[in-house]
Length: 109
Figure 1 (tube, helix red, strand yellow):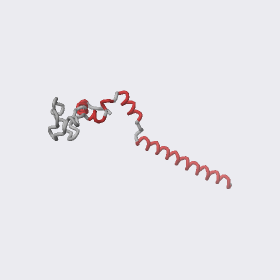
Figure 2 (spheres, rainbow, N blue to C red):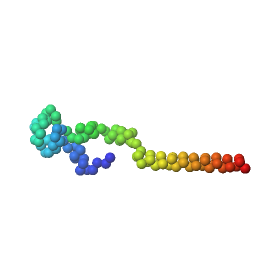
Figure 3 (cartoon, rainbow, N blue to C red):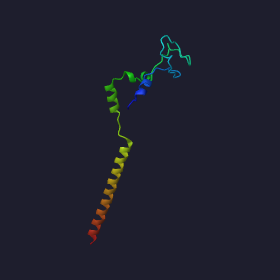
Figure 4 (spheres, one colour):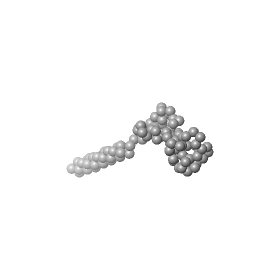
C-alpha cells in the first residue's frame, strides 16, 4: 500500500487516545492533560496511529514478508478460472453425448 507524503505526517502525529485531539498542545512538554477532554496524559499518554497499530516497530523487510505471505489472488481471477472450467466441463459433456449418440447410431445399422 502506497502512503502519500502528506499522509505520513498524519500517521505519526500523536493524538489524545480518548478524544482524538491532535492539536499542537498534545506534544507540548509538561502537558499533563488533554485541552479538549481533560484526559490524563500521565495515565494515558498521547499516541500516534503508527504507535497504536505497531507499524513503527516493524522493520520494512518483515512488513513486506508479512504482506506477501497474506497475498490472495483477487476474486475476479478465481471467477474467471471457474468460468473456464465450467465451459470446458460443458464441452466435455456435450462431446461425450455426441460421441455416445454417434456410437449408438453406428451400432444400429
